[in-house]
Length: 323
Image 1 (tube, rainbow, N blue to C red):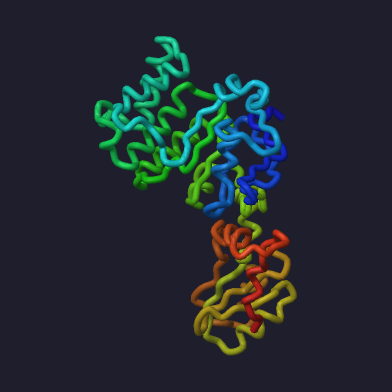
Image 2 (spheres, rainbow, N blue to C red; image 1 turned 135 degrees about the horizontal axis):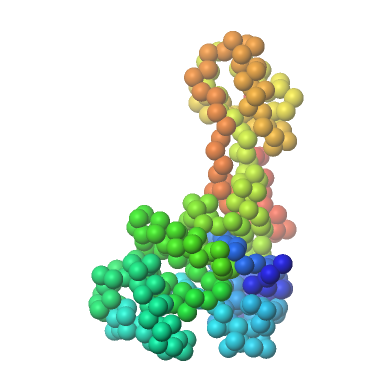
């Protein structure tokens, strides 16, 4: 596997606080990894250590085969980094700031012109190039930060909340740009926007209390939702709940409101066909029979909400009573 990012046993402590607790993972070229987790979970701290911005207490990072401890300058040259808050010199203009970034990256004249044209067009900065950065909206400041991160066309991108402050159209544009770049890069995106994971990420990782608690494709994580393959059925016929609960592959039946039920599968497998057959056999008048759509937010809550001391997520089905 062509690993572009290799993280092994990362630990970061601040006094008695362990912000990152033994995190290990690899990211290959062509993968967009979505970092998910509540505030204070350790996402930004992990990203800062990957970029060499922060020194780990323990563990190692390799970027494009380069060890961050042994060859920090060479390793950092492979990275485009958008930190939280999109820091920039407020009295500079976007074009001045991007030229400054090109100087730092030592881009030659031809490469500078080509890459400036690319980032200005694709991040849509044409209208504000000569305006002081301190006068820009939050969204435009974020776009200036993204432009400097991709200016030198790095093989690795570390983006902390890249669409923060953007309107829906701007978010779509940035997500499309990330998807286009992903073919030739390894990308890590920290985000609180779960729809962003579905939109641009082919892998998602949930971090809580400084540890990785879930890792897989968005579809794999969605299958861990308590609502995975649950079925909604609307019927006012008598005995519906009891008949549904008697099915061999049904674990629970929850009455959401009068005549509307959510039916949970016992083994996570599809039960909609069984329920449809039962409805037909009983001649129920059903106005709705559908499978719950995948919901990554339920998985997020499952792994991050009220985590007990042993590090295992609580079972969020405990409050569902069988009828």
